[in-house]
Length: 303
Image 1 (tube, one colour):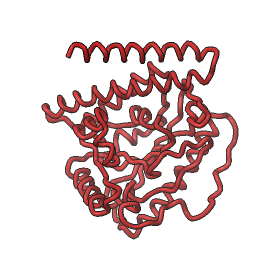
Image 2 (cartoon, rainbow, N blue to C red):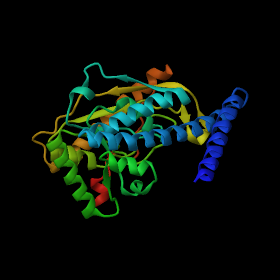
Image 3 (cartoon, rainbow, N blue to C red):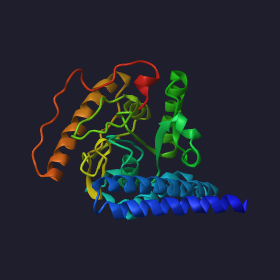
Image 4 (tube, rainbow, N blue to C red):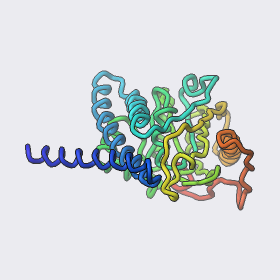
């Protein structure tokens, strides 16, 4: 047992030493900063996931497990601010995130850095949804299971619909909000754009009869651009839009709701990015369709 801890200590020391070395090298070689912050981010995620596991257990014992994801997200916010220098500036003067509960909160999905954005965005009594395969990931999956994540089996439409129904019941019964990425995957976009939206988050909001709170994160390829091996410190703008009511809407309204919300978020995304970069930008032209995924089964209903 002692030898295991010895080798783990050596591994941690080597990891830390390599990260510091790359940070120092980045003063002369810009690409070194990309790998330094990448290593720092992974280490931060593991540390906060372990914290999340223990926090979830402790909060569950005291009957407050629904605060676990908020508490863990906040820890990641502060740890990553120290290790990478990346921060988010939230523009929510009307307190929509704090005062709208329960709700389905949606955001655009650019890179893995959006996990850090949740640390700044997440209100109390909110949980994420995630694909079922993440449940088997050591530490992170344990934390997600303990803290009340809604897992979706995208390959099984029957299971997916059941999970959505369960999420709807939990939202109304526990006044628990849910955060979802309607794009379904990361765009890795260099310029402001949105992938087509899946309709799962909108079906869920309509089914539960709760508002949709759109949260738009400005394009941050100047901070993190994976294809260009760029990862810098910086501040990223975020705008919380006015909640969209879904009361009295039905499943027949979901497609229009999805399309209109996407167009609203895209315009705000371009506006935010234009302001942060100090130059005007045009809204991307629509190549085809209306930005809403047309499908059946799990793919149509799950974000």
